[in-house]
Amino acid sequence: MSNERVYAAGLLNEALDPSRQPDAIRSFLYEEETLIHRIVGGSRGLLPSVVDLGCGTGRHLAGLAGKLRLGVGVDYEASYIAEARRRAARPSLRFIVGEATRVPLGPVFDHALCLTSSWGTMSDKEAVLREMRRLSPRDGSRLLTVYAPTSVPARKEWYGRLGHPVEEVTDDYILTRDGFRSEHFSPQRVRALIGPCTLHPIGEIAFLVQA
Ligand SMILES: C[S@@+](CC[C@H](N)C(=O)[O-])C[C@H]1O[C@@H](n2cnc3c(N)ncnc32)[C@H](O)[C@@H]1O
Image (cartoon, rainbow, N blue to C red; front, side):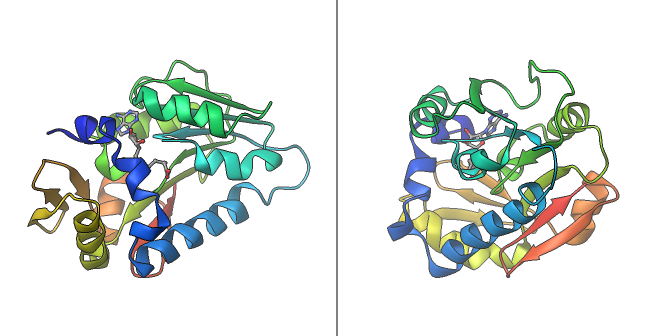
């Protein structure tokens, strides 16, 4: 199966169930959220506008909603967008079904997000980065969370608990038996793919990349 099919079968909903997360993953999700709130939600004066690519069921924008002028979530999985519209119904938020490589919006955002390793599961990463740069042109305004190589044991346990046992692990990715592919990135690999950026470590599990 492709990542698109595994997501369509509901992987994200299972993965976000705290009772199925190893402790290290639960801590990572909490720390990631805290960091995002500090960077995006901490601005004084005019509230920022944010686009979130691979927004899933909208939890990051829902958490930030009171601190945003506008939040737009984009995801190719229609059932996640339907759930986001139900769960995160706020006047400042919009959710659209769409491809992260071709977002039908102009460059009007203060931040572009691609969080919780969404980017590491997207097939055309270069095109997604281009869209993030176009949508949010200011340096340092693009935020991506990528898994670190040291996250492999925790992710293997997590995917196993979700019924997606891991079949292959390489220096760059984990592949489950049913074909779900999730990448991890050394700091050198991040810089080779993204260019100049700041890396904020999130425990042993991930980096928040600010580019
Ligand atoms: C790891 S999940 C994270 C979801 C959400 N950011 C969160 O943290 O709850 C990755 C998300 O990216 C979406 N996705 C993957 N590739 C995509 C693409 N090319 N275009 C749009 N969405 C995509 C999936 O449907 C899924 O909802």
